[in-house]
Image (tube, rainbow, N blue to C red; front, side, top):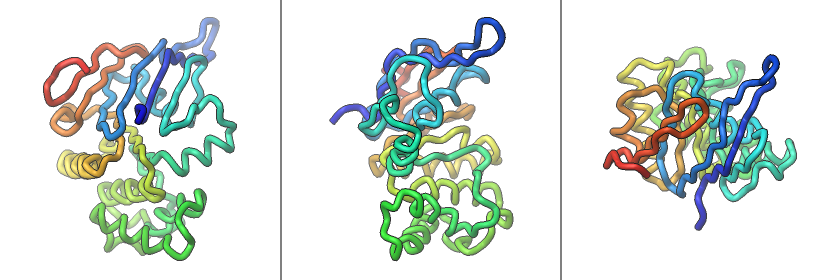
Length: 234
């Protein structure tokens, strides 16, 4: 079984002014199946750009990105959308739940898009996922009535809707108080224990207590890659 994620000599350059801006600079690394990896670094280091490349939301200027068995550069825009719906769960800092749908309907939405789960099973699956993340009693409420922590748990349930092998999270605790943030990170730890590959972009300082590996970016390059438990290079 190959790596869940493989980044090979990737460059991402944005056309700004005369010379442009290089957000990712000749980046190469692998993430094994079932790893829990934190991507850390200062603002502007390239963390979110990298996550967008892994999700197929953005395309590299050059280089190759393989995720969940697919060469993302070989897929069309519609092919990328279909691949993403089946293989990647996305969690964002500001939840991005649709305000006009109930919490359960938000979780069912990716199932409706990917058509991986039979229609008759979608609501039951949504309820099971919401129960698992601890907000089953909020299923038929509107997102605005939930606390930030509850909304993030619902967003994680939505990310799991199609049982994706890879979960990508961009600052998932950045909008939460420290106690709620710890609980959400603990939830990611539980999901990783199931064998799911998880990549989290975060500013959390205590992330090493949870993840198995910490990759530090600076100016779009890896400057440190450590196994968190041992504190030794990967």
